[in-house]
Length: 271
Length: 322
Image (cartoon, rainbow over all chains, first blue to last red; front, side):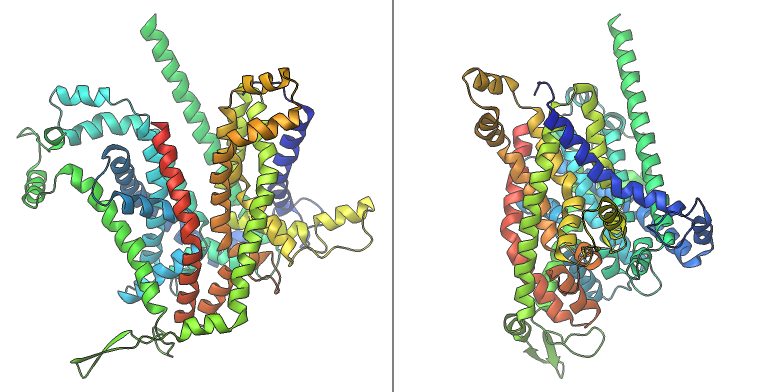
């Protein structure tokens, strides 16, 4: 669509983005507030961040969350890539409809249902609830996101380079690791990042599938949130937002560099 | 296809372990291709489908004070005689106690209204994005996605500070002289609507933007040349062409919103009934696992139609892409 932007267009963008960002900005700004009152500014201070470092429960929960997120996103990336590959390449195999259903349903399934059903299964097979069960649960829903990302990436994949490799006698597995994987790597990486943040973020499914002694950061934050707004939660939130913002900036810089590299290569190839 | 996908490594290149593994898999008729399907397939069967069957089974059990807190559905008496303890008690309770069906109705109402609000707010944003200069669009898309990457819990929490009685919004309105006394917004249904619209807005804007961005502007020019009012042209041309994106966005907001737990729990009041909250308290506070399972089964039945429609739409979308 190509047209001049009207006043209405400008206004809806300004209002829309203020609506999206104002709450987050207020939250971060007031994590530096000196007073315990979260809504009245009384001076700059980083004391809430200091107190956070002394809060052993939060630190332990943070490590637990990172461990779960790292392991589950790695597993989810492997299984999700396989699933995405199967969906994009294998056409109609037996049980395809059910497979599609199992990939797409978790994307919209209410978390309370997923959490409850996984918990009941872990109880039924008497698996001890804790780190392992949270990781299994997170792997399951994250892999579906990875599969969808990979499926759409492989849809636009130029298969002639794979065919060339195989015509020259490269076995399919080797072709995958030498040709296909490097090309789809950005999609795999963004699938991993997506899984990682989904896992960091999850409260409901983790609450259902965790056991005594396994508390994740969102569970810890949530139990404090129910008691009301406190500057410590603002500080934790600001740190998490900061990490995500840095990650996004780094990812987009890498992407930009890659695009520039590609353009330079193309330029060199044509000149 | 068959010969191309068979694993045929040149001898000497492969470690003995891998050669053994390939030989073992081949013995069972499993080739590389099959393994790629089978691994994720079985994972999802075990960790996604099987758990639903268990929920279904437990919803027919009887509550019992034990660990786990439900009676087994099948029991071997003296090791030989099989008895089936199928109880419809929990479903009867669901029907008779007004709390449950009121929760369902209220969830559907809140989800429907918030979906409409999200569409009304999201459409102008997506429209503005599609009309922005081309070089700015990528940045705008990034800015829509960015909040999605930050924690859901934190974004909901941010609204507590804004909406509460001594929060930012009331401070601002009192300062501006619009109100004399603070408004009670937090712990009301209104706060839940705001929370859902805020959290799910990116899911609505992205498909709408993708569709509007591809739209051919010459259609609107033709309409204008023929004397059509811009508003009428929007309603007759732009909106119908974006209808499939509207459907996708609405499903992406509506389905998860029906079962939402965090938003009604943190922003809603004690009178805000939503089924996700009911299920949660049935499970964690009352430890009534059979009843929680029955609540989940009915919720799933309510959502089956929208989920299947959403899925059909997704598959069709991908087929159209190529």
